[in-house]
Length: 146
Image 1: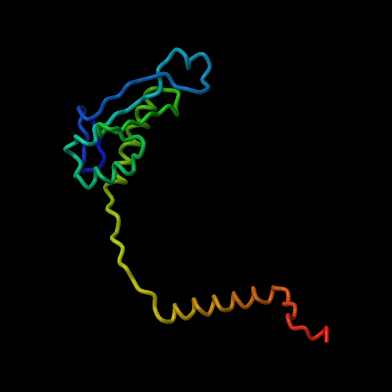
Image 2 (image 1 turned 180 degrees about the vertical axis):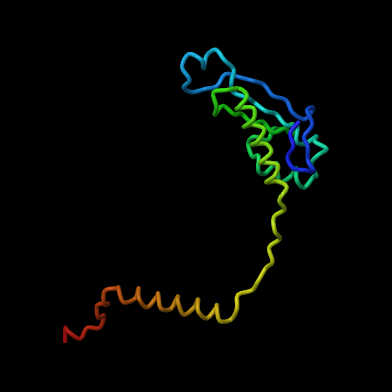
């Protein structure tokens, strides 16, 4: 059971964990002890989460969201199984807390007339600076030949 906040508690049936051998350095221990944890949370079937929270959670989870609607987290940062389990549970809780935050609705605003004028004046000034950098044009009339 994982407590996300005072309102949301994930039940044991929604979670399953398997322990696998961790990759990377670890000496002789890495080949013998399964310390990495793979935590699976059945997010799509969870009654603790509202549909809009599930939609945001799916976007946050990204590739960790499976076709079945589960989130799979693999943690092998620590050398102990218990610490990896705690880290996986905390990562899942953080993801859910992030999904609980509703994004603010953007209020469309129009630029003021003064800001439009300032923008155009800045563009004109910048264009004048760039024009000054150009080499002077060669005279195209045939005054020199006559």
